[in-house]
Image (tube, helix red, strand yellow):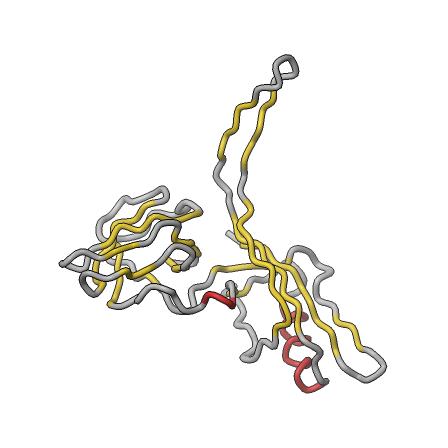
Length: 199
């Protein structure tokens, strides 16, 4: 099933958006020295808290959360404070070359000689959301190597497009009990839910 589209208006009060990594730590009981192993499976987590809503404002969100059937269905979501990059984001960025994996990506199609993405900016490739960790600069030919986290899970095709404006990932509710809302004595609705990246 395709991800469900969020309602058009998202009246947020606060958001918590984070990357949950998958690190294993082994500590010696004798010396207390430790070994750390970074495993695949890093994923984004989010918690959204809305400002008080009227019945009319709450209704699309009630329907959206009910339609998700708990954690069964997915939706596109992101860090709403970082929809627009700090870098120029200029050009039509594409993957430059097959077989790329890991946390670096060779790209082209940017406007030349610019800071196209800055550390902390996001981009989307396929349904994966990545954060730039080192400023990305295009050369005079519009090529740029991106350094990011988390690592790619799927091999991107040559010339696959990168989305730098309103980049998103596929998420699901963390459990079946998230589709809930509270109504106070003034008939204002309170809605909040937590989600995790789905792949």
